[in-house]
Image (cartoon, rainbow, N blue to C red; front, side, top):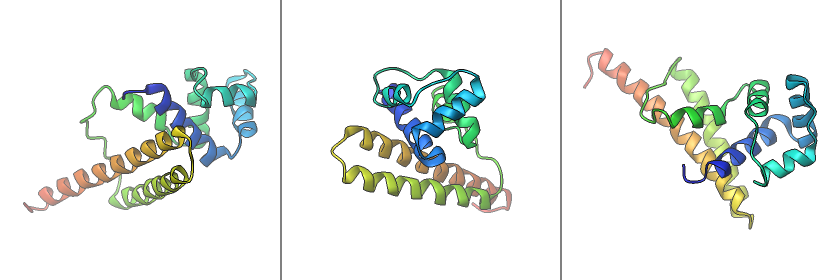
Length: 150
């Protein structure tokens, strides 16, 4: 993770765009969950990389969205090879579809943009798609071994 701030900013931008739609809604969510008001200008500065993201605001937005991309990325730093696959293969197929679609969307947006942050967002989305594909593969291999396959 060469540039952790850019990675977190890209993940937060994707989370805000995908779950809240605008900075106003994200700011209101943070205020409702933390009790601390935050303006959309402050969020814009964070997304531009001018200042970092407080952990409580990251948690508030992730919890409200039901997705935890920043938390997962930070946890991967502790043990990047850990097998965290859980749930059915059908749930994993849904996650593959979702993450792959987000990756394609981010790639297309980055291709049409002159902003390096869009490529950081695309890289983040591609990484998330690869992660769910790898978890599904491990799960399939474990199931194959459990059924006597090679």
